Image (cartoon, rainbow, N blue to C red; front, side, top):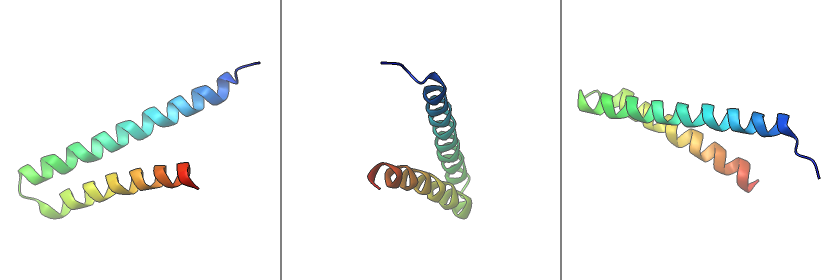
Length: 61
């Protein structure tokens, strides 16, 4: 049994990138809510939801 290290590193990199993206979008949404900017906050949260739903669709389908 061998380990495909290239594929493992690709999965690790993609996971790290998407995690940073979701956390950044969520923090931007929280900051926008604290300054009463509703539309950018909703857009940031919608981006978070879109990324999570895309990830779930990759797992399910």
